[in-house]
Amino acid sequence: MILIGLGYLFGVIASFGVSGSAGIVFLLIVGPLVALLMTIYVRVTLELVMVFFKIYENTREMVRLNAVSGASQPYVPPLGGPAAATGPMPFQGPTT
Image (cartoon, rainbow, N blue to C red; front, side, top):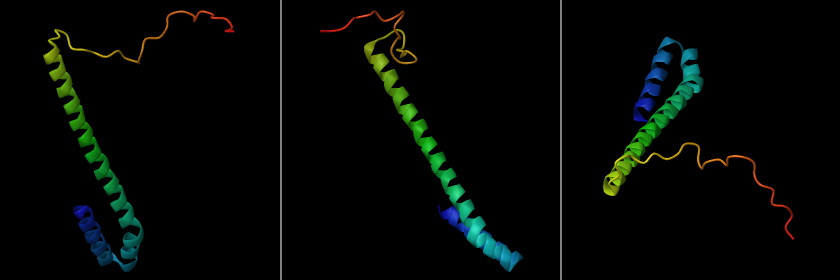
């Protein structure tokens, strides 16, 4: 965040050095937009790092549980949730 603010300040000073109107445009439109996009980028990147650490923790826990249980093959959960019924559902009729 500090680097984004310093970059914004440098951009304002540099654009005022070019011309007054360029400085005002950068100060009011371009600078805040770039700062906002950079802040979003940093946030998403840090969230991604947190996801990688969570994946590491979960994988480590799965390995530990497989080692404790003494399983020769690692447990692989089924894809797509519970198994679907094979064939049509039987008619149960009205309940009275």
